[in-house]
Amino acid sequence: MNKTLPTAAASSPASGPVRALAWALAVAAWLAPLAPAQAHGNEDHAAPRSYDPRQVDDTAFGREGDPKKVVRTIRVDMADSMRFTPAQVTIKRGQTVRFVVHNGGKVLHEMVLGTVEALKEHAELMKKFPDMEHADPNMAHVKPGATGEIVWQFTQAGRFQFACLQPGHFEAGMVGSVDVQ
Image (cartoon, rainbow, N blue to C red; front, side, top):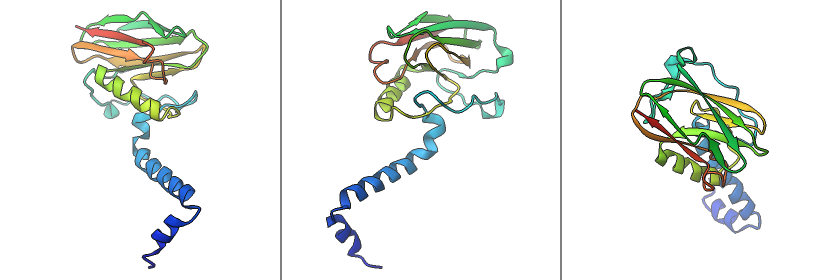
């Protein structure tokens, strides 16, 4: 093994592109295991998964809900004015709710349920990786004129949020709240 090869490669004219490619591959390898949990995308994403109670994870604000146990449907509209209507909803702890999310705008929007801290962190991640794909149960990624759904069981009391985490939308105030009592 030639131990001087890395030094020689580092001083070659191709070292910038080679290093950039190596760095990109290292980042891709590091992010690959996170893809199911951190996925986003321009407009297309994985097909919605079937509900499987064995694959449901508890979070600080609840868990994926069983569609057969929905007790309430809440319609939410997303607009290019960077607002949700309604912007505030109240849920009873333990309820399984179906959010029917309509994008009445001309640009891509999404509704992501979470804690204030998690949504802020995810919004920052979206700035760095705006083309990620997604299919998480707490998200509806909706093309203009289309409708998506989230079925969620709110197992914890408290105030949580929903937000559009498309770059710039969260910062423009596209945020709502869920009060769980």
